Length: 98
Image 1 (cartoon, one colour):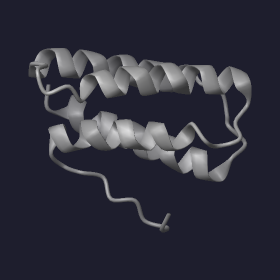
Image 2 (cartoon, one colour):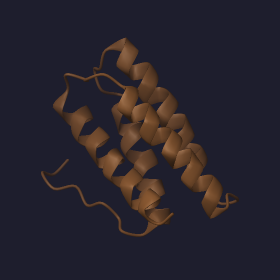
Image 3 (tube, rainbow, N blue to C red):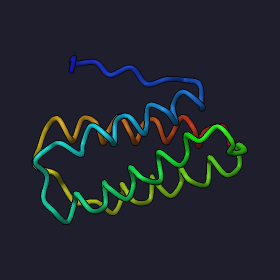
């Protein structure tokens, strides 16, 4: 992963990137309690990428992801932390268009 992470400005692309960043945390060595929060956030984020969702439902799912990420403890893994920060930024892009 490079030092710079590009965050999409298009809400639909940001929702896709959100799911991708959370998937990337699954293989990282994070504490089990934190991993549970991240796993749930990942599942909801993947749901938010469904093509058959309307904008309002997608934003609701992304709000759920943002809440789950706020509840997660520190990972003690810099790569996971970078993906989580990118995921949070993706949430902001999607939710800014509410």
